[in-house]
Image (tube, rainbow, N blue to C red; front, top):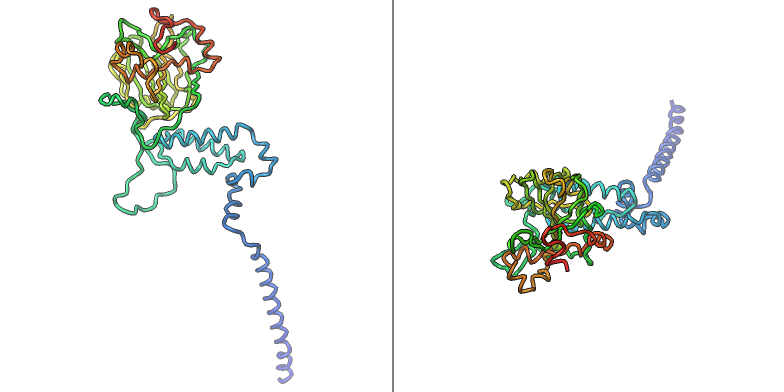
Length: 387
C-alpha cells in the first residue's frame, strides 16, 4: 500500500510537468498566430479597398510603370465625368438612366486604376428623377417634420417682361457655371450632308413680325433619317409637340447652365430616352408651336444623339430642319442698333439674344457652311446677326 502511494507520488509531478509544458507550447502557438504587427485603420481600409476599388492616391500606391501605362484618355474621361457631375449638382440632378450609366463609367475607370473616390462622392449627392439616389437605408427620422430631399424643378434661366431691364437671368441658387472659352459649337449634323443654309436673324414672311432668330439646314437628299447630336452638354428644358400641314412635328430646346441655349424643330423621330421625356408632354393643337417646360430638365452630354429623323410629311425637295442658338449672358450686337430696336424690339427676349451660330462653328465647318447657298427665297444670306 505504501509502495503504491509512493509510486503515485512519483508519477504526479511528471504529469503536472507534462500539462504545464503542453499549456506553454499551446500558448506560444496561439500568440504566435495572433501577434502579427498591428495594422492601423488607414492601412486596413487601404488593404480592403485594393480588392474592390483603386487606391485613394494613385501616384503613391501604384507603381510608376503602371501609372505611365494608363491611356491618355483615362484622365480626360475622369475629368469629363467630374465636370458633368459638378454641373448637374448645380442644375437639378440627373435622370435614373444617366445615374446608372455614370455608375458604370466610374466602375470602368476604377478597373483601369483611376482614383474614383471623388467621382463616387459626387455621384452619391444626387436625387435621381422622381426618386432619391440608391443609398443605404435611411436612418429613422429625427423629428416628425423631416422632409424628403427636394428635387430641383425650376428652369435654369428666365426672362420677366415686366422687368425687361434685367434681361435673361439665372433662376437657381448660386452662380451659373462658366461657358467654355472660347465658345465653339460643332454643327449638329455632318455638314457634308447639307445643301444650303437658312441664315439666323432673317425676316421670313411679310414683315418685321415674321423675324426669325433661328436658322436651319437644307439637306442634299430626300432621306429624312438624319442624326443630330448635341453640340455641348445641356438640359432639355422645353418641348413642342404638334401637328401641322406636314404631320407630326417635334421641337426641342436645350440649355447649358452657363447661359447658352440651342435647339430646333421639324423633327420626326427621337432616340428612346428623349422620346420618353417628350411623351410626358401633351399634344398641342394643329399649328400650335408653343413649348411646354420639362421639369426637372433632362441632361444630355455633348455628342449624344438627340434626334434620329426629320418630319416625315415635308416636301421631298425641301428636306431640312430649323436650328438656332441664343446667348442669354448679354444682348446681341444687333440689339444696340436703334433701327433694329424699332423693327424687332416687340419681343426682346427672343430677338435680342439670338446669335449667328455659323460664327461658333469650328473653322473647318465654317468654311464648308459659308460656301453653301442661303436657301431663303427672299433673304438669301442676308442676316441681322451674321455679318
